[in-house]
Length: 329
Image 1 (cartoon, rainbow, N blue to C red):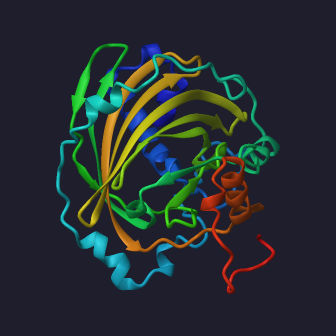
Image 2: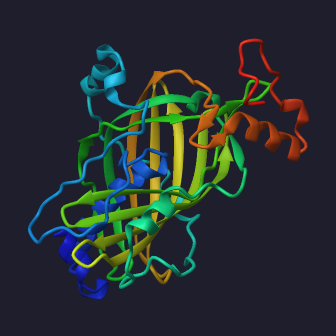
């Protein structure tokens, strides 16, 4: 059904098929949004024989595998009772959406996409050294144990759909990269960030173009992110369909849980709005915050110090301790 929906013109899709299509893509977006690598190795866009199935699977970044966690930790979230919840922030978040987005210039439908181009996208290093403060209660490793799509509004037909049911989730992710001298924790914006998944004769490419904090309190963070996601047909290596998504995400710590409410506005490749959907998910913290000093080729401790100095915040530059490596300062 997903492949069929991608091959048809959007205007011809039945509303129920459009819902199914966007729900499927949105699920991957919500994972990618938090920085989880959807595939630990680049998806091979080489052609496959007709009918040959190579199912994609979601794999977490090195160090985030459930196999590295104690059995008691990994079992705890799965034993929690799934509780339906109606987010109270739906309207507040949706009011912050853009009316339109810039048109996609490269990854458009009909364009041929190669392995070399995929490799360039996945190896692209952020050009800006941008950081933002997050609530200390948000910092650490979280295990998501449930999620729900609470509403879907088709902007083309005016049709609405509510409550898709609570479903289990098994995503593990980290928040927080560095701690300043005053003890506050900061997040690094590694946009643009590209990941990909392969499912049968298709590869879907997800690129987070930007990540922007909108507001922050002691137990709440609201961010806006912009994604472009394209599906490539491996029979001819051409892009079948491209969508965009603007996500307004509210993270709020409630007791032992982190509740994430997301309002996503879906756009076509020309930047015209298609639909708005609201989802929520719950997570349980399983490990405290641990600084991330290096990520790939990036020296994050050094970049964090430079960001604070360039921002006129020298008093927040963390002092080097006796047990810290000198080559990253």
